[in-house]
Length: 530
Image (cartoon, rainbow, N blue to C red; front, side):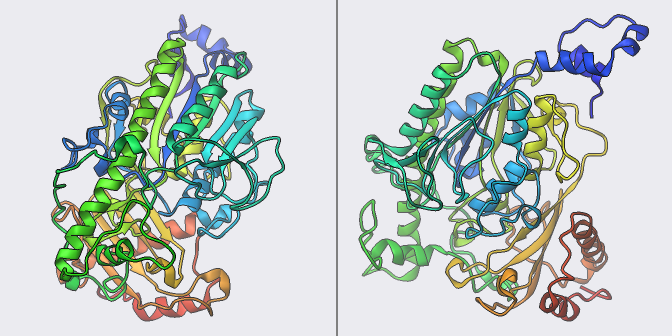
């Protein structure tokens, strides 16, 4: 971490002589920092993959440019190795607010309610003198706490003419309540956000979370974008029709795949697909996958077109009001998303397309323009970073660390080179087995333990087969060759297993309280070979 003297120098505050520096009282130094505290504008979409943001490159960059999101990266920094610790909407949002892993914040799955009485970063910023607001997708079921103002979607929310639950109205948990607004959800979220910015208390810095529903399924786009990509053939990823024989029994039979999506787009239980039916009746499986991919990507990217336009609206407001230099602007997503890779859609898996979060940030006073950072950062670190920018103490029970100085190109020498992932959800509808693992810069080791949801006593749910997977990301960046079991990697895998258990122990996510999982480990954790 950069010390206070370096901070004061970097902030343009003249400090003359070592004696003068030593003479700074802690109280005075903190006052100086607080006098220069930035506004924090945190914009987060839902399921926006790095592969669908043009500043990240990739095969879609020319088909679907995102100039406004790219502008943040061009005027600031792009993170290439930002990861989610549990790739599903509700848990990720709880992690971001608390700076704690799922097992410590109590939100393991989509179905767990967020304990609004626990500490969260908004409460700390509010107490520390920030004007706090939360607008858009909340999806934590219980009433937001720590926000001076909120206006949030019930549950997932609607794409068209959405309902919002505003602070001051009677709160109803989960998907109920709210009043209806006319318009397209992405536009309405931005309208409310800009209105709050215009009417905010201007004697305080602000912490504003602007959360978009898009591009979450079922990918209903704005009418103005309905002809976008007409006549265009979207390029296919290499693994659109992946041969899964290399995968373990723990993963190869599961997942929300493109063939399944083709069936959903053709006929659904209750109604036609919202953006039009896909007729696959005369297609073989390969053709169905290709057709579903084209429709999925076009609908998905049309939703992103509205996101990028509205990010542009936000940036213009900051420019017009003279706030750009004093505001940290962050754009990210609550997790990654499969865009046909591994023949999948959705998220949840530990494969990189699901694991990686986009993250671009701009703060002219500290972050150099057009920089790229490869440090391994997770959403467990977000809350700590907000508090660091606000010159507030980071609670000891938070489990991440601030990456403020990483963004400024001054990475601490002891920054971690690995990260821990755990996906807890385990029920038949998700079609994704429970698993955990470790990712380093080069390797990824995953254990699919396949037990039912652990907080249901290990007795209910969907039982899957256990299995191990191991990938060399340098040789196989798209994770198309599971090499678990190859003798030449036995020592490496053994070390990573030990490292994985050490991390689990350090963060308090041990398996000892789950007897059936311990039984499974005893059968499938071979320490003499892999």
